Amino acid sequence: MSKELNSDNVFNDIDFSDQNIKQLEFENCTFSNCNFLKSDLTNTKFVDCNFIACNLSMSKIQETAFRNVEFKECKLLGLYFENSNNFLFSASFDSCILNSSSFYKLIMKKTKFSNCSLKEVDFSYSDLSESIFENSDLDLAIFEKTNLNKVDFTSSFNFSIDPEKNQLKKTKFSRLNLTGLLDKYDLDITK
Image 1 (tube, rainbow, N blue to C red):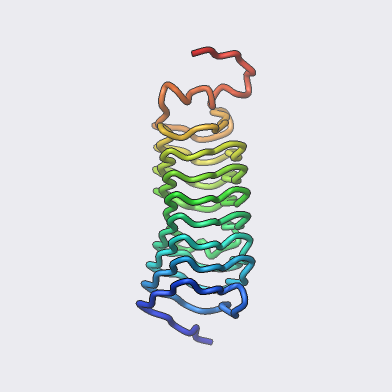
Image 2 (cartoon, rainbow, N blue to C red):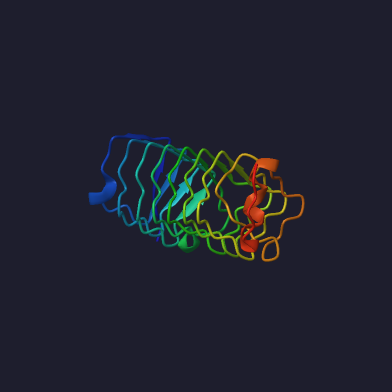
């Protein structure tokens, strides 16, 4: 069964939460100020798409494909990206709120998170190698058996990463945020 293709379209101020958007395909589309809150995006494919100031919080993304997708100023609360189609998964996040989302076991090399809130996000068992966390809040984010090789954390904050439980070769930190690597030792570090 072929999917309905939407190509080179711009969608402004649309409430998709009341529409059936399962099993559709969007290529080179822009979504601006759209509401996908609790939408069912099962088996939907987004290729070379931009989401600007959209709300995708708590949407169902079972087997949803995100390929070269950019999210800017979006709310992405409680999304389980590990349920998405991980074949060629590629996304970037700028000024987004991703709190309580999960990327468990997802391969997402070279992903950029810029000015994002990533509180309580689960990155366990994922491959984030060569990713960038620029000026992002990682309070209570979970890193366990995560590939963090060559990841740039120099301007991130509030993270807690156990070096013994994660891969950290050539990972970048600033002197100011190194305490996030020592949390398990319950040290009193002063400035």
